[in-house]
Image (cartoon, rainbow, N blue to C red):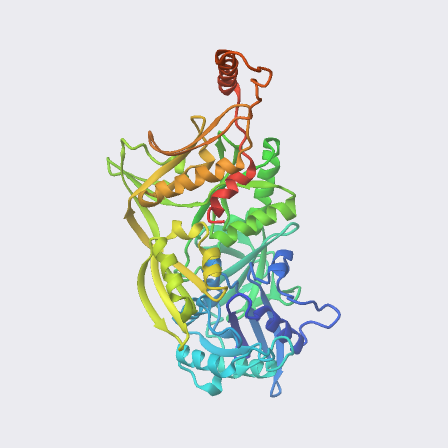
Length: 596
């Protein structure tokens, strides 16, 4: 065990951790030049294109140092805020972390939140200043930021460049020297933490774990403590570039287990594996079921494709256990699914994967969050869809989820960022200058307000210089109303939204104006109304296409023209009773981009 080192990498999106991981794999000869490709650990096309890590990965490297062979287990983590629970479990499986900071950009909000997670677990932090080869690098300034943040010495910071390979040997040396070897008792009952799982179509779900105590052998009977399922360990092994089967994995090491599990929901990240015959007394602390934060309806464009969409969702859930869905139907869109996502990025990724991997073109409805509605009898109803809201006669009050948001930006954008957050019903909690021109601002704000277009607007007003991170705090009493959109008196349930009473008039007016531009003109007038309960608060009309019926009248009495116009009016009225309005797909997306 004294020659094992388990570590993870903490970095903001685009600070170069995948590139640095590539260099470490090449330096330790884990991969030969023939098999090498950039962003080796990111095996999804989507990850490569966007330059983000969506799924965490693990790989074992052998590194010789001062005549001894060390096993280095790298547990890669996603950098985005949506996947923070996965990050926390990966951190729990390590003894040390590389803190990678871009020398040209400095410290960002997500780096800080993941760093706090690592410090909570008492990890040894090795700070690395990456991208030193860039002409815009500011090593002295950024090094000062790191020293202020974690209180290390300037000499502890390792300058490096993932692109050129500079500093990689120094990083590997620091991992061996600074990170402690894992503690654990190989003779104790088996206790292993699951930090990730992947789905293989031939072998079922493969769980990745770190053994805390004891050892696990192939063909032993094991039990997953939180789900209470028992399995045979058909194969255990270590994670090199491919999976390498081994007869036994001992305390302190990282490996995988294949036991023929067909359903991804049976393997939960953070669960504890133990033996059936000699179980451990209690599971490893910190396990929680991942709760979706954002809900949206996903519907097929053609209603006949519903069964295909169901199959696609089932297959997608095999790869992504944090996606939840249940069937629902909408009067406007037919049959579809109400899905729960970890956040907005997760929602985008699911939609894109449906289009790429399954050729499914889908319509997303307005995303919303989960509310707690309390009735006059004191019962609590969880509302994931505006149509689930109890009627005004039985509804007592509603609570909505709040978050604590951290925004780091340049000091010149403080005013713009603050006014954006106050517009979104935010409460300013704190403001700290990290350096003379970089500020960390802390806000409390409703989750519903950041679901729409908050991130895009933040990037726009700060010219891309603001970074944003949040974590959920609690539920609070709020004055919310259900806003319904009606076309010719018929409510379009896919466009209804729960919104704060103060913003409802403005929001309803803007939606009606937007729909007036998007809905094509018919042979009859279309009334677009926004209403709260029975009260209409905004209205727009799409005028009918009309033919000039008086063109053939020349001269003569006005009553002849009036008679023809009245005849036309009656025809339009009759047509309106039998005509129905098609809502184009852009209309559902328009709600998300009201400020354009």
